[in-house]
Image (cartoon, rainbow, N blue to C red; front, side, top):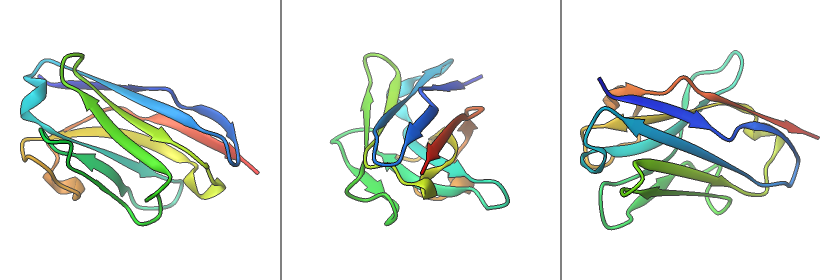
Length: 123
């Protein structure tokens, strides 16, 4: 029932910025914690960032801390991932996901997933 659609991926140069967006439909947006995950070829899907339902509580993977910012707009049913100082190591398919939990960093606790958006970082 709940659907998530990511957008904003593309080609970036190392050091550039990119902003990903995810629109959530079919559910009560402000009841979900939201997360961003990524998966590079041949690697496991990994946690990137998450944001709680309220109060602006966020969490980040150590690899992106200080460079990425996750935010949400409950009036627009959207969650965003601002990616700054991109590195080649950030190249992956990025997925947004929704959990019935207030906040979570583990993929197995997420209930709904988008199809992903490709982020390519050139060196």
